[in-house]
Image (cartoon, rainbow, N blue to C red):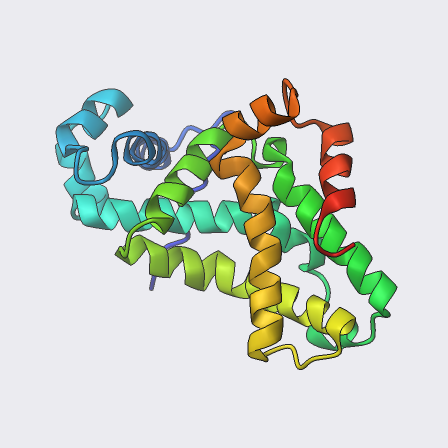
Length: 220
């Protein structure tokens, strides 16, 4: 049986040494893989930075490759609980089908607003997004994990919402591309955030700036 993904944020007062060690290794690997890349990060670096014995990586995960997969599983689980997926997590397909175009537009807007809010991902937001973006630029086993456990579901929900606006089938190429274009609009504000801030003369993207972005988004 596959174990549950490691929670990126330990619960206060956690005493389980195994849980503490697994969390430390996953969080450290998340940061180093995102900053240095998978190939340029050694197991020694991960062990030293996490305060664990190097043998702990093999004991808990089997290999550096498996640790990478575990990081991806944990990121996908966390994004699913706290990222854009949660906006319609409680709505089944039949409920989405019953939305009016205006209700669907409002739901899409809610998705985008959550995606633009880095704070929703917690203190590790920058590390989570950095790892996510680095993995998305290469064909790695982690991409399959991120897609199957977070992106696939989120994309399908977005497609179903978009179909309420364009009148096309939710699984048509036109609708799928439109949904991806919405994601692309959001991702640019993370991928090149320093450029966005300089271009706009902003110091950060807070609630008011998120509304400005939403007002200019494709759905309008």
